[in-house]
Image: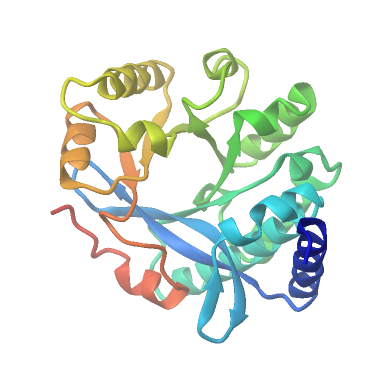
Length: 263
């Protein structure tokens, strides 16, 4: 099968999966570094291909983005994550947030703000428990329009995370223009962090800058105890990665709430 034919076949499968509602969230814990307590989760898209088979985004993200259907998948993840949070809160687990990734195509939709808020309200959730993750590359698609959408969402109580910070070219400029609540540092920066190394100096400076601007900081891709200790020492607020837990199903995530502690 040619590369083009393989891509067409994958896209056809993606379309069928969207129609069958086969995309669902997996929840990766986010820990507060000051005390190791569970602060929330990032809802990550997974494709349920069989009862025991979940496909990670590396198997579908590029094609879904290229064909313009990733927004439909993201909306499904938002709907499912809000439904899960509603169940958690009904069972007394109301102290955590969930963040959901959005794509540039979503943010350009005229109805995106209203649709997002309607989903949150229909689930009976306060807007503050939802955080939306956006990247610099997405904002640059249409800066004024996307900034307006984010401003409206933030005014309604939704938190905005600036994702993959440190991987673009004009991130520092956009900090003065975007209505952000937190910065999430790119995992490539975190994976190379060592005592007195260049990555540490960069991340330390970004933490200081974020705090000066009143923003919280999150490190993703934390895999070792040494990384956790360094990040805690320089004042990073939150972290996520395999050191704490791999992405979990909704029931596993509910069981973890209130129990995650730093080693």
